[in-house]
Image (tube, rainbow, N blue to C red; front, side, top):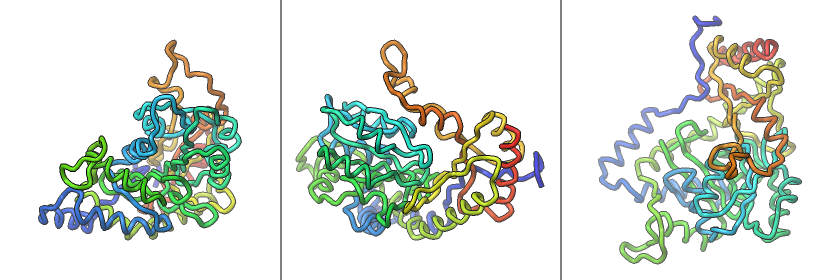
Length: 369
């Protein structure tokens, strides 16, 4: 069935099942609802996903990024190398601590930071590199870590979209100084809302724990100036349930992507770098013709779709220069991707019939674009 009579296939489908509801109710009835045993258990269990690193749960992925930069002591006068082809939170976290983002271009295949561009952007004020594992594809961390080590820079991985992704067998969140995950409802796993910071450095982990909780470990014994960015135990309980299913959901996403790769010919399907494990938070294709027309055809066929991200961060209002211009950035691959990408449904709830409809509609839309 096609066209307006076909059931709409949403671009994402967050899971909130009986197990999640029961976990939340159990915590609510316990009376221990903030920064309690569920949070501690979630942190311990999530560590298995990031090679046993210390895990610090917070209230969002953006908070994870901001607290990490705070814990590393970044502030005014410091620069952080970051992609412009990302969600605004990546650069917002830099600005929120008073530092400045230095935007660099992406690799066309992975949509992640181009290591050559990163190396060229490092200057005397650079303090950190923030690779974003966009759409679930790991950035070129082997090359990025080498650049960071050469210049003595921190590496803060934005892994908000990449739970379980890996490169050469090492999971994202286990490469850099710290890794930052999001548990927003549309992510590969969620906790209603929440985030996690991962690090191999116990001192950094302790600082993060202080910063998320008003600067104190013991009540009223504040050691530093901190914020309130704690995760609730309700969120942690939901996250723990989701974590038990992440591996299953990830394999389903990967299988769905493999099928779409084999069937879609009317659009450019997402390549995967050698030794990379892509977890397909988004299945992002490129359309070289009229993207709006392609999206309209997809929507008419009942296929949910979206553009992540139509406006690169450096062109967003907060990042324009005083005269309203996008600054001195030369980012041709970023501009090209922003003009060409469409994300198609790839979530685990898709049936085989759904996948066939998505592929057929993509081929028809790509041919008409």
